[in-house]
Length: 172
Figure (cartoon, one colour):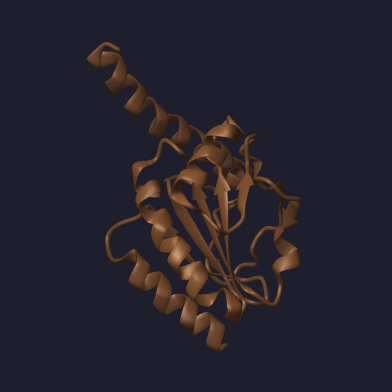
């Protein structure tokens, strides 16, 4: 592939996501702490549909990701460790994939050894509902279904922040 074509593709994906986010902003307000987490139902890879509202009573981390997103791939092993560490205490991770092709999501989930539910948002309705502008985006929801923390993007050190916030929410 020509170097300019590679550059175009690398730049086009974030632009497409930004366009998606602007469309979502027009449809509703961004998800903010203390607001109720918008409910959704999505199919899961290799399992039944999953509805967010059915997770009430648990602390829920909703992580929006895509296979083409480098920081998403970097973050996944940390999310898996957090899931393993706290799931017996009432914590669940929902990995919401926004790729058009569910096979790509399934292949990467297998490759990375994801053990938490991976949900498929191929039509981008849920990511629009949550008004995303960055990949990955992570939303922490308390046991009562309220958004408590919103993280846009991923950087080194976020796993420690997530760990602290999860422990706080589990103690409530």
